[in-house]
Amino acid sequence: MKQVLSVLGATGSIGVSTLDVVARHPDRFEVFALSAHRQVAKLAEQCRRFRPRRAVVAGPDEAHALRALLADMPALDIAHGPQALVEIARAPEVTTVMAAIVGAAGLASSLAAAHAGKRILLANKEALVMAGDVFMQALRESGGVLLPVDSEHNAVFQSLPAGFVRGLRCSGVRKLILTASGGPFRALPLDRFAAVTPDQACAHPNWSMGRKISVDSATMMNKGLEVIEASWIFGVGAERIEVLIHPESTIHSMVQYEDGSVLAELGNPDMRTPIAHALAYPERVASGVADLDLAAIGRLSFEAADFARFPCLGLAYAALRAGGTAPAVLNAANEEAVAAFLEGRLRFDRIAAVVEASLERCPARPVHELGGVMEADAQGRAVARSLLQDMAGVLS
Ligand code: NAD
Ligand code: MG
Image 1 (cartoon, protein in one colour):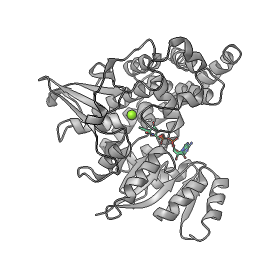
Image 2 (image 1 turned 90 degrees about the vertical axis):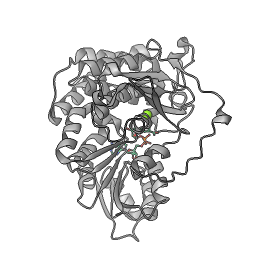
Image 3 (image 1 turned 60 degrees about the vertical axis):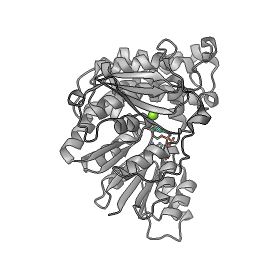
Image 4 (image 1 turned 45 degrees about the vertical axis):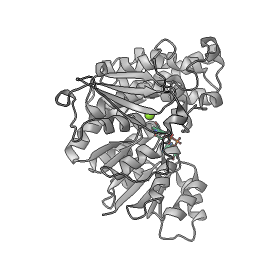
């Protein structure tokens, strides 16, 4: 039986890698829908190649432009806006959803796939950070399956016992060790952080990614979001998730067992490996990634994570421990701060300050439904925006 796919965020870094793997296995995968935000020309090319039944873009202008580019494909149903994303995530024809929209914008469609009981290949980590409880509950009720695409979580998943069920106690697992490259500023003198530019922050040493996650990697907020993501996917508390710096990004994460064994997944840093793993699970298919050449790499190195250099990491652990609305506020404030940095309105070394002050001003409340999550998201954004305004004169 072929899997029928909706690829949400098809024009992004993960979306493009997904379609690269899909194209290698026409016998296994069929594309039902593709979505993009504003990159209409790129989406048009993808539609020509993969012949989906539906395409979704940001708004009416983009829909009009896509229609003009694809006038010779009249059967293609073109829609726009957040509700159209939800529709392609839960359409009955669809078996599998690649959730690869960046940020909170991906929550509604990722969650719709969870409610509809789909097989969800989750790259959109922000959805779980914001609404982990709601998301996992939706999966339990619908019988949907979450397969982690984020390389660390995919590596942990591969290193856990087969048939692992949420909760580590019966599996003899002591802790999860998430590896982190440390990003482009692992060794940058601290007094140079203030002058970091968006292009410097987006030049990751090992991985090629979208701009938002690249900045998150440079502040290490990405690893913090991943700690929260891991706690939901694997049902573990903050005390059992450790971050370890591993600059080569060859080991993608590890599981430490009670008997002293440590299992890891290794590979070249290319997202097509975890994407192919999630697409084909429990089988294995070719991904186009070159074989790992450990002799050429020579040595692997490790160091402890530096929480003073990367305060965002500690803020994420604190938000996970506080629970409730805190992770949604953390995520919202971070998205606002990163956008401000990318637009030249905020200094790189102040991103953490905006997130920290936002968390202080929005005390954590319990939350078990989407309405509460969206309120926390809106509150976190409003507070972060007002902080950004207050800081504008001081920081630029
Ligand atoms: P990207 O910026 O390259 O692509 C984002 C995609 O989302 C694009 O298709 C864009 O059109 C779409 N999009 C953006 N804003 C939107 C909106 N408001 N509404 C609807 N669609 C919108 O991002 P990426 O690097 O591919 O990352 C996607 C997700 O995967 C993120 O959550 C990221 O954290 C996660 N992730 C990425 C990588 C990676 O290597 N790139 C690795 C692990 C996890
Ligand atoms: Mg990752």
